[in-house]
Image (cartoon, rainbow, N blue to C red; front, side):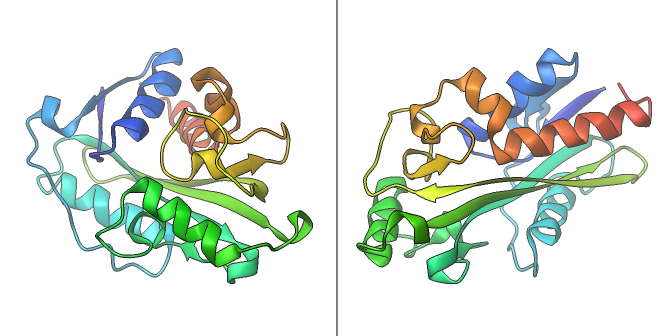
Length: 199
C-alpha cells in the first residue's frame, strides 16, 4: 500500500518519508499520486478535526490511503496561542521568519521559566474503504530568546526541546525524527498500522 501525504509542506513530507520509510512503508506526495492540490478550509475545533478535514479533501473518491496532519505551537504566556493558527499567525502576509519575529515580540522579555510551550500534532489516516485512524503526538519545551539553528522549518529555531536543551533548528533530521511532535505522532500511527496488520 502507498500512503499519500496530504500536504504541500516539503518539510512535513520529508519527515513522513524518513520515519515511515524506515519501517518499510511507502509514501508519496499528492502530485506523485496525481491528486489535485487540495486546500480545504480548516474550520475544525481541534487539531484532530482539521486533520480529518484535510484527509477527506485529499481523497474524495476513497481509493487512496491518505495521511493528513494538523499541528501547532502552544505558548502558555500567550494563553495557548498561536495554537491551531500557527501557520497563519500574523496574517497571510508573513512568512516563517515573520511569524517567528512576531512571536518573539509578543512574548517580549518574559523570563525563561515562564516561556513554557509545546508542539502538538494530530494525524488522521483514512484507508481505502473508509477506515479512519487518528493519533496525536506532543513535546514540551520553552521558547528561546532568539533564533538558534538553521535546520527545520516554521518555529523550529525558537522551540527548545525539554529533553535536549536544543532548538529543533539546532537538531539534525535524524534527531528531530526521534523527538518531534510529528515524529511521535507518526510513530503512534505506525504502531496502530502494525496492530491492524496494515502494510
